[in-house]
Figure (spheres, rainbow, N blue to C red):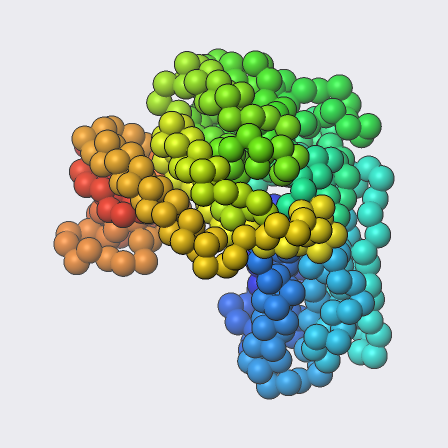
Length: 443
């Protein structure tokens, strides 16, 4: 059988989709590039952002159209929307026969084989597990970059966030299992590992933890190969310890890039969000991080137009963004997520006001991003090459792209006939674009 996977949302979903692809290929199935070619189509869904159910319904409609409406095509919906909607998804498309929630990813390969042999059957798997269930490691070609989950779920219950309802309560993996998987992907050729979790700093603090702290886990992973790059997402500011901060000074292969979600800059808004820090504590954390690693590149998440947010409070967010000097950010207008506390707040902000604030915030971020990128010109760095650049410059050689230790996208021209994927190439940054950098290879 041929299969095709469509992935929405976060890096955890990307990692889950790649694991699924490897497992299905290990069972003799072939991955194809379009739904039209597939016997099995899997949608790995996200419900964090606005209108996720509509996006899934639209995607299922496209699959139905691309496959000519063939009822023989097995469609499965996995991830957060599957956890949220369950059997309701059967009504979204006549091709949907598998629904698998966030704790049931490991069950999908068996479910696909079962349903492929039982054309009239459906299967809905949405139960939460009490512990992190280890799953077999998928075989197959290793990308230069790898994602390794260290935990599942979240206990924070920020008032706007649906994650605790769709991903469940926090469950940490055993440190030995995380280290073993990291060792395996490095041996298979990965040169960079990103450790994933909804709240990585809280790793090990739940009932399923084995007593290993997040900082200790970092040290163990970094020690596997001092030449391999290590990153992590996503931390929570309230849980970031002095030991976590010190890791940026102590571990040379921990990349100088951190995504640190601020969400808002006004204390009243942060309190209503249940973030459990104020703007002074966040700013102090940023200062501590930059003392530990002065060249640290910070990015963040921001929500504008949270219920009750005043113009003055929005101005406090702008001031904090400038104060922290974020090199990039993901910013969104607030939208209700079902079941969250904020969805019951009555003082919603009108959509035109939200959009106006978002545009002003993003204009400020464009300014800061441009300054950060321009400041990189002339610097030497190293690029982990991932693939050819989508656009070729037309000059000598072939343009390739990858990331430097700061997470910036860098394009560099290399000799014809060379295949540098997975190599770390030393370069000098020569120019800055709006969202990326251009470099020349150092000889």
